[in-house]
Image 1 (cartoon, rainbow, N blue to C red):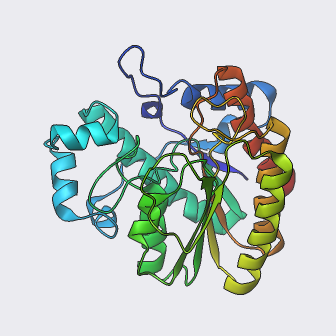
Image 2 (tube, rainbow, N blue to C red; image 1 turned 60 degrees about the vertical axis):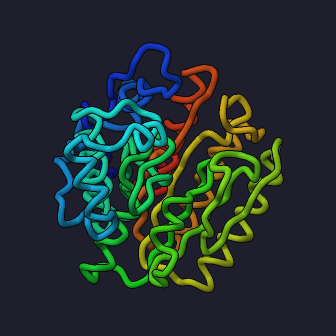
Length: 300
């Protein structure tokens, strides 16, 4: 059974005019339920992630000030969201959701979090709408509890996973692979184990060819026993922040490539949704929904 993390707090209330599309977190499960791609039993509501697990990844000083809502104005501006208790609670539920997904992925082969992919959060600061790094925290939990020996993080959000790269800079048991827009945020990019920077306007053919060959090589050489996938859909041509030129069909094929590589190797896979800022909300929901449809078609 495909188990999907979803919590009502995922749809956080932001000030009017904020460009981050929080509506998608409510609309994605509604669309999937409406069309019959999932049932209510596929969804589970995660609790809050515990402090001990967070501290495997994030520095104590940063975590204490985040939880007590005492970050500086400069730190809050760097995150991009107004800081509130509800926002902090949201990121704790997201973190636990991705962690819970690791258990379901081990049982069923794949599991998904409707939110997450918060890859700009570094060990000691938040950035780019990311407070805590959900996939990094889950990966560190698996490593420290000896539930995985070699983890691969496939980050296909259009923005480089700089926080993830920093967190695992000196951790050989976690391999970070980021394919992203060369000229996109962040301006200063941390070094992943493998970074592939794409030119503005990269289309389906270019993107998918590069992904397929590189992912096959990584899988063959690394032989991971657990994979995390950041499936941001801000690679689409109509994305307000993306600068690439992929179609919805190409984005779906991207998902198929990643899922097929994991399924063929019988490697547990956890997917977080990552970014997406399409001009049309319907386009955004369709692209995200395709990832769930592909998971159902290929695994169940």
